[in-house]
Amino acid sequence: MAQPTEKIRPSSQAEKGPIGYSADTIVAQATPPGRGGVAVLRISGPQALPIAQRLSKTPLSGSQRHAQLVEIVSAKEEQLLDKALITYYKAPASFTGEDVVEISTHGGHVTPARIIRTITELGARLAGPGEFSLRAFLNGKMNLAEAEALNQMISSLSRRSQAAATENLTGRLTREIEAVRDSLIELLTIIEHELDFSEDEIDLTSTQEMSRALNTAIARLQHLQDTAPYGRIIRDGVRVILAGPPNAGKSSLFNALIGHERAIVTDIPGTTRDSLEAWIDVDGFPVCLVDTAGLCEGGNTIEQISITRSRQQLARADIVLVLDPDNPEAVKLEPETGGKTVMHIKSKADESAISGRKDIITSSIMREDGLDNLIEHLKAALHSYIPQHEGAIIASERQLHGLTAAVKYLEGVKEQLQAGQPIDILSGEIRLAVNSLAEIIGETTSEEVIQRIFSEFCVGK
Image (cartoon, rainbow, N blue to C red; front, side, top):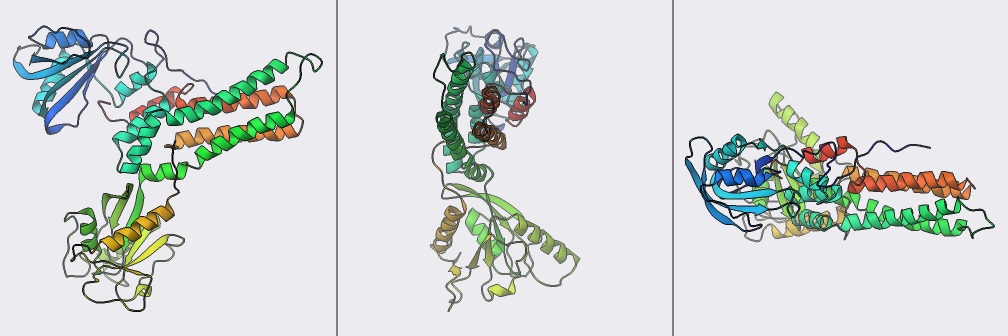
């Protein structure tokens, strides 16, 4: 029987796991750097409050969750750096589960950087990517699925992506996983109890009862598996490629859809030589819109390179918008678009009418409502292409891998059950399924996986 790999568990405030940092204090800017009204600096660790007290010329009250306006001074020259709000969160009632101080200072590049430099001179070190969230995980403030949801929320490109991340952040996926895991643990308890007694001493669980329990668990896990394509799309987006012959209006339509002049537009055919990408939100879905060079026969070396890149984009497309106002068959799209959604667009519908072609979508960037028809067709294409789901969503390949492994183990148990295998073998395989589910929410997860997940976070989160 296969043995589970070595795991680590999130640990308590007093005793962290091998990737915890119980002795040091970290600092980072939690807001994006650059010009802005406010910058938030976050300090976490045992020296957070003492460092904050040494930063300020005004004695801090030490009251938890009470914002105090103070003057911030440099450690060496005692120069005034800023007037800022300092808020103290006492462990464990903080984001990380440690003592945390948040400093709301004025934005810009210089002021936050000088205050952070002073904080490091007072004994803190610069935080690594995702280190605040890592500490929150190690201190039991969130599980691994919720941490992934937090990162997805920060990087969301659309309303639906943000909504799905919010559902998982509030623990909906966790509750689904825990419900199945608990049912399997209950089944394990029954099986292992029966191993201690003979048939004459207790009533053994029937094969039919065990099969029903396994079928229920498998069905619930497969329902979650079915959400993975939707989760991938709202996480990674849908690639919509603008294709067609030179001077068909691709760049003009690209600019109109993204809402500003990104692509160069001229009357000269072949103006676009390379692909341009921009993200837009279409009915709540993240769409990566790609403008490409015109497809044609012949041409010089540069034109041939451009066409090759356009066809490479077509091969990566989910949906293709072909701008071919006169003769759709003139643009050869195979084999790159085989099996993909292809929509034929007349983007200069204000210039001439289309007759006898019901499969061509008309739009015009010249009229105020000229894009409405195209956008409605694009929404319909997205809803047709994207599987719809509500509730908990599988949001990462790691989560899908854990589910797939658990389903595989449970289906193997069903087969062995029907074949009359000894009950102790069934117990071992069910335990492996439980371990796979526990990995999803981080109850038992390898250090390497944890480090990889949190390294994808931004610094300051």
